[in-house]
Length: 456
Image (cartoon, rainbow, N blue to C red; front, side):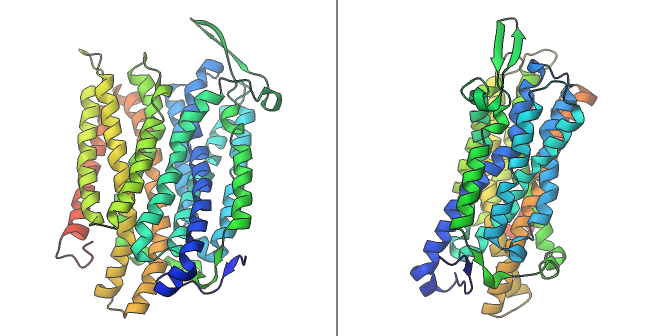
C-alpha cells in the first residue's frame, strides 16, 4: 500500500465510490483510537488529583484545581500549532509522532505519584506535558476533514471527535479500577499505603499513567503502517494563515469555546467539584458518565448536522446549557440547605448532553460557512471555491479546537478562584451563563438568520 496519496479527490463521485471511501474509512478508524488515548492522557489528572491527598501529597484545594486545569491550558496552546501541521508534515506522519509523544507524560506520571516528596513543580510540569494529548485533537480533526467530501464531513468528524472524546470517560472509569489492583505490581511497583477511619488500604496510583503505555505503542504502530498522507493538500503556514483574516474563523472559535470548552472544562472539574460541594458522595462512581454522554451525543450532533441546519442545533444547545447551569446553582449547598446532589448531577448531565450535541454541530458549521463565504461573498467559481474552502475550513477546524480547549482551563480555574474569593462556585456559574447568552446572539446573527450570506 502506498503511504502517499498523490491525487485525492473526495468530491469526485466516481473516485469516492471506487476507492476514496474505503481509504478514508480506514484512516478514520485508525485515527479514532489514537485520539481516544490522547484524550485519556489529557484528562488523567482530573482523576489522579482526587487521590493525591490520600497517599500523602499535601496540596490545597486551589493547587489541586491547578493540576486539573493545567493540561487544558497547555493542550489548548499546543493546539494552535497542531492546527497547521497536517498540510506541512502529512497526516500519517504527524499522527505517528503525536501519538508516540503521549508516552512522556504517561510514564512520567507513573513514577512521580509513587513518592509524596515529589516537588509540586514536577507535578506542575507533568500536568502541562499531558497537554500533548489535548493538542492531538486539532491535527487529528484537520487530517480527517481532508479525507471526506462535504456531504459526509459532519458524520466523519463527529465519529472521530465523539469516539475520541470517549477517552475522557474511559480514563475516569478505568483509572479508579486499576489503581486499586496490584495485578501489575511486578511491572509498575509497590503500592501506596492509605490510612482512613475505615482502616488501612492500598493504592497503586502509578497505574493511572502506566496502564496506557502498551496501548499507545500499539496505536502508534497502527498509524505508521495503516494510515496515509495526502500529497495534494500540501500548504505552508503562510498559505494557511489566511484564516486569521477571516471573521468567521473567530466567530466559530467563540462558539466552540462555549460547547467544547464546557465539555472538557466540566469533565475536568466535575469530580473535584463534587468532592468540594458534596463531601459524602464518592465522585469516582459518577465522574465518567458526563464525558460518556457528551462523547456519544457529539456523534449524534455531527450526524444531525448532515440532515438539518447545524446553526439551529448549536443555538438550541446553548439555550439548554443555560438551563443546566441554573440547575447547578439551585442544587448547591448554602447556609440554609445541604443542597441536592440529584439536581446537581442531572443538571451536569444536561450540560454534558448538549455540549456534545453542540460540539458536533459547530464543527459541521465550519465547512458549510466557508463554502458559502467563498461562493457568495468572494464570488469564486465552483471548483476554486470548493478547493479553497476545504483548505481553509480544515485549518479552521483545528484552530477552533485550539481556542475552544482554553475553556478546559478556564472552567476548573474559575471554580477554584470562585471558591477562594467567595466561598462558592455560584459566581463562576453566573459568568458561564452570560457567556452562553453571548454565543446564542453570535450564532443567531451570523449563522441562523436567513438574511446572512452564510446562513447554515
